[in-house]
Length: 173
Image (cartoon, rainbow, N blue to C red; front, side, top):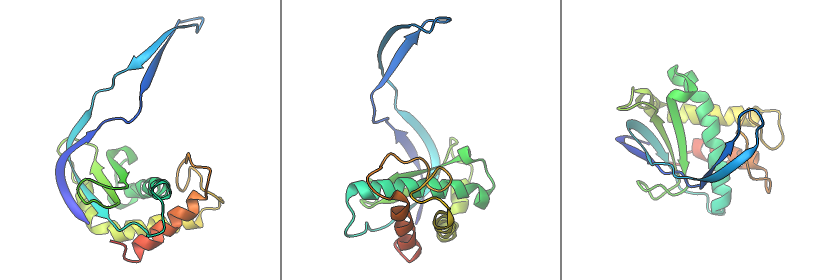
């Protein structure tokens, strides 16, 4: 677990296209690519780095970390009394700072407003509550209530998220 103040830079990984639609008739009158600028935010954050489970593929780890990040973000407002959009959780399978799978939590405001600093000492409890929530959800393979909408349909992402959260709460740092 670490605390940092750093510039956050995000470059979207996708090619965006626009569609021009005529008012009234909704006719498609053209389309083309959109060039999105890099988003920079100087803010504060904390991170939790861990060793990847030995037998997991990068794809499996990515799916599990995405679901885990969603579950973590759902509980942050209960820990620091903020709006869900005041703070963000970003999973990275191999972070530049740590060379390990890492969850970053950062404030959504320039300069930070101290939310991630409050979470710095609460990682263990936050991970435990997220694990408990996902495990107790009534769905079978994951839903928007526990791990969010998932793209992967090849495996049971909910089980992977539960497995990852249990490993993290049992001393995975």
